[in-house]
Length: 310
Length: 141
Image (cartoon, rainbow over all chains, first blue to last red):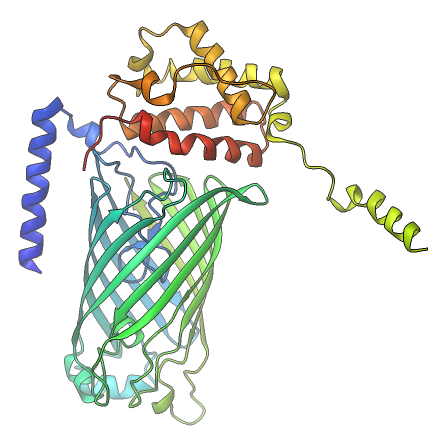
């Protein structure tokens, strides 16, 4: 991953030098948020530009094909028994390539799996992972192209910070998730409103998005998963929508991950700020190790996310 | 009896919201409405520091005429656009995506100012979006 970052830095410097040499584009021009409102999406749990639980084909921030964009975000979700914190940073170069970093944590609430986690995890009852992401826009533009969607391919490099626990339950502590995303904006498509549609094909071994590691003692193969989002833009700065994402279900030692879904409302008062509220259906978290009377089944979370962008 | 029910249903359709939908042209307020939106739009873009340079040597009255014809035609009004195609009209102007989008934002402001319903706004924007390809010639990656 360090190589990737070095490569990207080199790529960026070359492009900046080229742009500068060609027409003396100034730095303020390069960061002036030339794309249209809301077309950078928000930040999904793994740190990529997207919805809340689905990476989209859109490149984060508001940079056009001659500009640089970026975003930082913080997310908090609470099921009443468990809570998640998430934060990260991402840059989008020339509306072509996106680099992201996120740290995603789930606090187990000092019970259930939390007791095991505490024993193996230096007393902490929190599961964490670091996620580095790269996304390349392959072709298409979600806004300008009439029929062709914007299509991007991405990789998430994930590293659990709970190696001992994750190995104990039969999973690996590092993994990669590969995705192909197609995103399209349809104008005047539903009650006069613009509509955004996204569909993803995902290859992954991640249990609970990687918080419970990758693969299991009985199955270490990649799984083809599907994710989709649909949003209606009530006005230019307000989107309401829903998402769905399927998950690998083979971690029998803790209990299989459930498919995730959510309904959300995202508000973009300007290009530099967005606030997303959602209700997320996370299903069963660790159903196989629930203590009597302390179920982690059917966990639904209130979700709040804020993003700053340019 | 069936005929009466049918007739009653048809007459009650407007009340249920199934009335013949106003065309985007009507929602803009027809010829007069388009005239006002274009006037406000051109006033905004020529005062917008992001893109005013592109209009420094433009013949404003002619530009407004072409825009009125084009919007009217795109909104399915009783006009036809007889100006140059988008590629020829913008050749050599070195237009960037940022400039194209700035223009769209100015158009949004002009439509908002004239209370154009959101469906008609989105209809017109949807017709203009594919023009990015012939209009924007100064591309990056």
